[in-house]
Image (cartoon, rainbow, N blue to C red; front, side, top):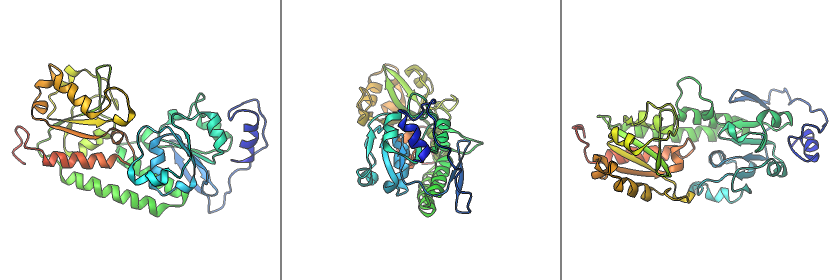
Length: 332
């Protein structure tokens, strides 16, 4: 951290407004400075960060995918097991908190950069607002997924994140390789597009017998477009709207994609439990998709925008391609 931040923290809290601190000089304006924008906030880096802290699993795995474990001062807010390809590097990074990080925990880590997937990680009752942290000399980054502009897809925004972080950390070649790998997977999925546009239900979770499904603005909506399928609730302008089993049945999905959140550990989180509940439901059990066992199981975390989302896309694309012909689809 800068001397200004250290002085502020010495007063007892990162955000303690009554604490005075030495004036901070602006970042170097030399030609080597990196200037980017993150969700509308301009950032300038005179040199690459060396002590970054991540506020959620998605941002943690993004940095690990970019080969930045050595630059990480800590991680937090793990939702499920880290992907196998990142496990070895993850073990080298200090876990500051298994859940949401507090301002005290962030202070103890002495970061020079803080990265999160969502803007709501930066609140006064958590680690502080972005404006407050920037005022103290700690730049913050929020994924472009949380501040969409124009018609770009969540995959486009993820790739924008990789490029931006690649510039900040000086690993642009690594970022471009990551983007190329994911674009290749997206291209393969697109080549397997369904020709008769079956309707797909994307089931994320069930809480107190209430299903939460993919609406029209999340990563499954983008996957649906790539795969050439209809998202059953594409007309709902939310990421994970709460619906009823009867509403699902009325839309007669041809295929049900089930997110497996078993590692989260809550009752009903596993894909097996959700499918069993569907089979026992008096209305859902009568659907063709259920009677013909047209279920596809994917990791639940991959149904949220992340460096792993292309895995779920690839798995669903292949499952649909391998699935026995759906009613009315003579193209398979």
